[in-house]
Picture 1: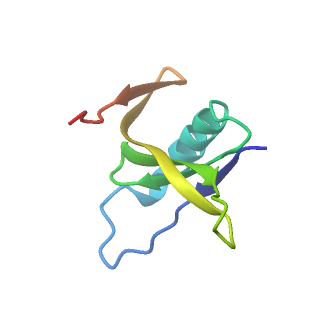
Picture 2 (picture 1 turned 30 degrees about the vertical axis):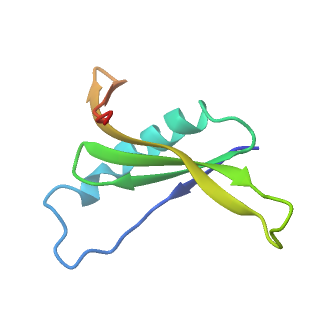
Length: 96
């Protein structure tokens, strides 16, 4: 089963309005979890009130490794808004 990790970073100076948006973050996590494959994990970090970073990890192991590791397979920056009860997600990842 795919798992999602929620990152709660304690900042010394937290941006205004960020603490009140845990419901928006929860909805983003639920949205991302629905798109994951069963061998993937996801970490969601809230950057600003409406910007999120999403890292997707896939299980990785070679013959000479003693322990399995997780490799980042995708990293995205998302702008998320809630309009009329619906999430509007815009992918703002730069493809270099």
